[in-house]
Length: 308
Image (cartoon, rainbow, N blue to C red; front, side, top):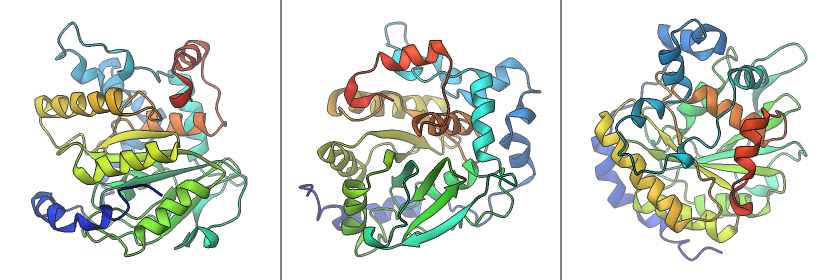
């Protein structure tokens, strides 16, 4: 049992001030430009610079780094354009490949029994977790991913089945307005779920790692589960502030973690930055997509505790 068990639910007061400052998220984030950016086929018509900016958002920030900064960890997962296109097929429904909300659970013994690979998303309330999942599934018409302007909307573990390939789980947010049984629910799931391949821990690009996030990182470390840090809402801060947050998170990853994948993923659910890359990473780590030789050898160089 992780030693900070009671702390997660005791941070409500500290987080309330942050919630007041954050901009509200619209109940419906789908607007005209979103669908134009959701498909790799659509964005392939853009210039190379624009294309790279959407798929690999760190490239826009790279030129601001001083020369002695090690860039290797920012580019460890670098699949080809073809790989990313192949990954998109897993997020595109067809007659033989159904993608939809499957079920919800409040306890691990209520979770669906399935042998297929699973990934889950956790993070602070209002970090943009449900919005991110909605973006990942934006090629699925009518899929039920509820997005709210009120923090703490997700109260259960929500399971989305991606054909026979894998399952995506939307977990309740921690901190402000977290469910009273949040710790028991999430802790039991993370420790007992045998088919869980990767946990994605989301951080807000406007504020970086908060105390509650640090506790969540320590929880993942203590449980010894493989996890990934994802920086959401990267469209909000100015580039200078965003880069400062990125470097701060990267420093924590390098100095305080052993089970965390060394690369920080940057995403925006508003303009689709990093979404296509994250889809590809999910398809790969669930064993559904083999990437090209160059990317594979790069990933194999990572230590065992954080390898793909």
